[in-house]
Image (cartoon, rainbow, N blue to C red; front, side, top):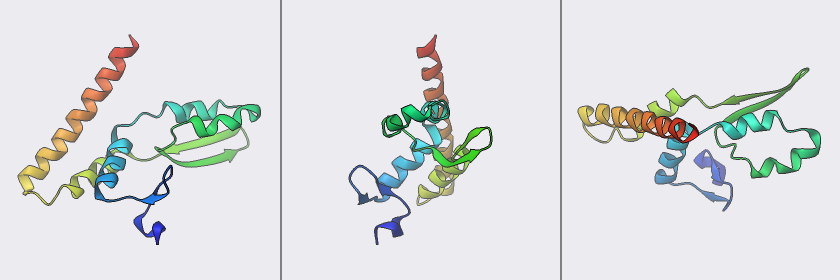
Length: 117
């Protein structure tokens, strides 16, 4: 029954509702992938630290002959899904919602880059 919802809140093992689905899509669309990159650099002795990493955006991990390959979810598809989720509004409002989502993502990236420099 829990799996019917598509994904589970792993910490609490509860099915997610519509608001959580929107939050998840927002995290896929705007979340960082730094921990996914860290995953690539963990050695065998450090694998115990994997639970400390935020791997929400990781869709696939594959072992190759040269190491590991990590794929992340498609941000554009997440944005499109957010737009569909908000499509209960008028068509113009839906377009504005997509614009707002893109603008928020751009602002988040800008803030993130600004904090590095």
